[in-house]
Length: 296
Image (cartoon, rainbow, N blue to C red):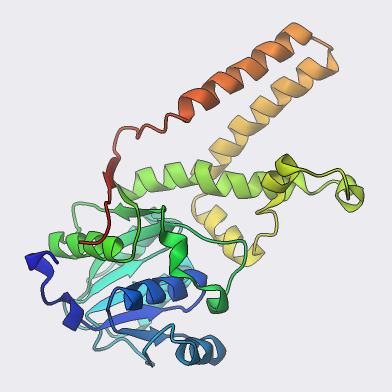
């Protein structure tokens, strides 16, 4: 273990919000040798977490926590921060899917905790603590955001714990870059999948589906309350990407309806070339990638 973090196993780590990701973070930290305390508004997930070893103990507040993982939707995170007492100097890490909103909420007033925004790029089509599994972090990236107000030790501790939880890489960027990227890579994908199934043919396609259909529909069943909040809080970036998609679809539709084979081949070729270039997966400006070779 890095000597700068020799005492971290003695820190009190709290996970607030025991859903799929909160539960998986708890399990990953426990498997790495940490003691984890769970906080949850609803009693049933907390009872399950206790009885199944997802957390070590239950708590009703975070007053004595040294490190807090806030695993709630964005507005619930902001409300929790405003309505709960924190230990002075505690590290607070949220795992929300939007980061500009979270930074604005955190820095809108004086805080006695030190904030760093995180976004684990992992998940499943199912939710709930009963589906928690630290293996979902293996091969996954953790996005760690920062600003001029980010405390260096809180930031480095976030990266250290990311490695401890078994993530394969760290992606460093600002909140603004995060929101621009996630609008395309995650939010637009959910929009497309949900829109794709709004076709009467969905009710009579049994026996005609293969891998492409499964890929397109896998994330169609969004939680409308969770995802509508994320879409609205990142609306400017998301609507820009939806507009780009609409223009691309219109281009293909026009070529098909006009029976213009040359135009159709040209637009399909352009898409293929962009896809092949994108598969090289090179980070763009403003992003640092740290490949992790296992726990410290």
